[in-house]
Length: 244
Length: 244
DNA sequence: CTAACATGTTAGTCTATCCTAATATTATAG
DNA sequence: CTATAATATTAGGATAGACTAACATGTTAG
Image (cartoon, rainbow over all chains, first blue to last red):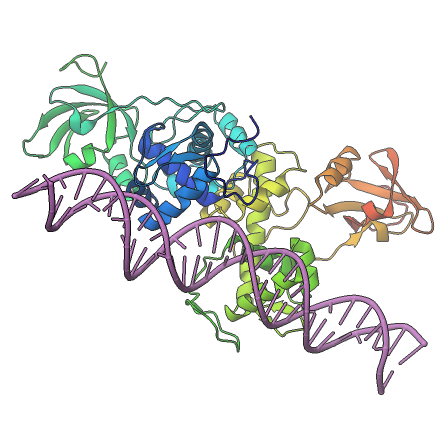
């Protein structure tokens, strides 16, 4: 399928027969994918907020992307990626996450700094480079924050995880993924050893959105619910059972 | 010296208090540096040709770069980098060559493919990334084609080398550097083992721009003068002496 | 020293991407 | 079921970067 399907509108100036998306276009597709988990209709404002743009800018861009067959768009009704758009988004996400992993594993980048660097490199790196990076560090399946890396074929694990804030008192869980875009928060989580792979137990939750008390690797600590909401976990089978 | 000096023109719209050069601007500065070897006045047409643009486009851009203090410009008279422009150019050249070296050493990129990849990455990679790459492969001083890498402080070996085409018959020499931007030519040179570091002897030069006969590592071969002109060499002390 | 050629610049467009301000649509609270 | 709030879109404009066509300046050959 070399030629992307066109939408009903037909304002095109040059035939978009390509795979030569610009940086901003890749950013839009990625944002739309990440907000909509791939196949839900997404609101203009949410895209604008995620990209740090005005809603007006998003309206304009989204109209053009629709004429290029990357998404379907009904005004005032939001936006949904087409299959072509979805593939492009996943390609960019793969690049981003492989680059993050490579920086972390091969160049000892601290985990709070890989995101910004990858944000720029993802638009410049060729597929060949990304694949070589992935091979060099053993084809990782998650990035340093625990986010799943799409395969070369464009498949990604889309499991939705529970957040630590949603976990009931007494439950044990393994940290699966943390939000990746706030370096300061990442440094703080790192200090607390709240990183993908570690196991923890929720000792207690103060009411009215109060702090959550945890035990991690023998240490007791407590964090606020806003932070806990950024930490995705996989509950361990048995309440009160120690991390196996 | 945080504030770049302004030229006579004063059309600026936003204060360029920067270090935030765009990709195209970095390309212009790099091209001007490479054509002028750093401190010679450079012609509009030469810049246009090097960048694959029209002369008209270059005229326009160059005027803007002058208002930003990156180069000095007198219309119809060519262009010369300021100290600020020179530093920016060398920063980009360092990025390019470190990236080429890294791709080659750490990711086993073939030497004919590193240039194009670096051409895109050089605008996206941070100084931190470039420095980590350089450190990871032992602070190389030349790139895979033998071109010198500017230091972090912006100093570069500017030695001008003889080309193989200029070398007299009977002379021995060590290949120092080859032109980097033609992948096909690089593959061919690689097949012939004409790579930086190897020693060779010019056995003969046919007159009227005829082929040049060489011995490299025991093998005899001959190449045309156009190709030989792209190979820079360091003559070895003694004519007829075998490569020591 | 001037005509012809080479080289360089300006004028006027174009596209991509963003913005602000004004307007339109949809959703919601009484 | 309307008035208001929330959301989204259009209108109009800016900037960076590129192009073509027309014009200007320099250089050089007789």
